Image 1: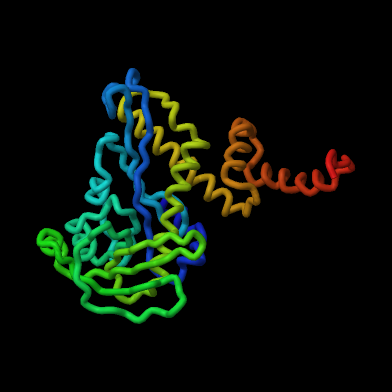
Image 2 (image 1 turned 135 degrees about the vertical axis):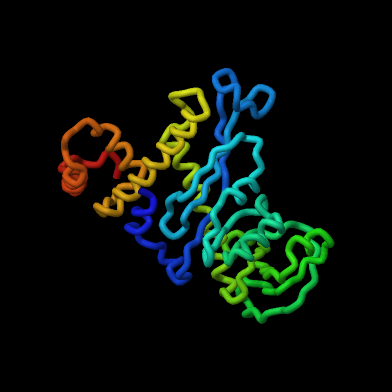
Length: 286
């Protein structure tokens, strides 16, 4: 279902120029009642699981999900991925492990991540940057630490960037040598889509209330939540619905037992919307 939906959905116009797949990898922790889920002990009086997710940035839907114990480190998810040559993988500083980054590089994939503080390196080449732009420096560096140099023996690109809206200074690491530095910054900015996905799925699909207490029941319900999300996004695009995904979900939830075809249901709502705006009812406040 995910594969067919990715083909059908339009590509984000800001990422269309890449002509390559781009993914964001992150995880979210879901709290569980320790009395009901004793196998998910996270802290002394708290249970939890972690959902490791890979989101397709071009279409905005998840393509990979693994559920683990809440104590599992985020780096574990990198070992579960089947690396796609030529694709971009975007993640935050929690995933910076030079051995794993080198594995991505040797597999023919590209990574974009944040640089850790006090990272030891030597500059091998400095690239020209346009004066007054958000890109402050663009350099090829060699890791200088004995361990990091052994784990990642190649050159890596180091970009310093200042966000014009917030003034925040960011440092990016990537193994792509020719892509414009502004595009690297855009890729990392697009990583925020996975945070919005986690927020939406927790708020609107109620995955905090589980119907079973076994690990398999929890995993099944999480995948059911992902399926609902993908179907809503697919429905919105296929019928060109003007409602937001959460509104579409609400409408479907109250009409789920009706025999009205979906396209007719939303067509009626679309026809009624202008009538409501042209109603003779006077406004309460001017």
